[in-house]
Length: 121
Image (cartoon, rainbow, N blue to C red; front, top):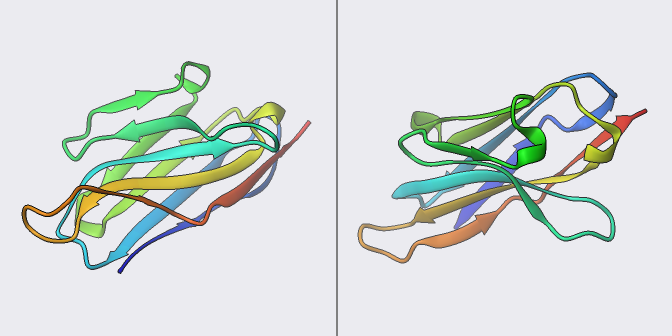
């Protein structure tokens, strides 16, 4: 089994910062891309930032210059540093990983349980 466990969410004032972490554990052979998504009440889940195993990154336009995604491949961990947070970025943030549990195996899509980020205005 594979688990993705997020941490670091919480309450912060607008303009503040938070750092999210997500650790993947279990029967993992290799991890391809990892990413963070957000989902506000009544809205669809959307990509915030993604990072490949080689370190290439992509971001939602609205967070470019304020959020930074990084990963530690040795620890199967992905981070999201969020600066200058805005009230409209209040959402549940989900960790995502595409990974294989065995050599040549299927590239599965896995999700964490989500962590709440609340930005007060």
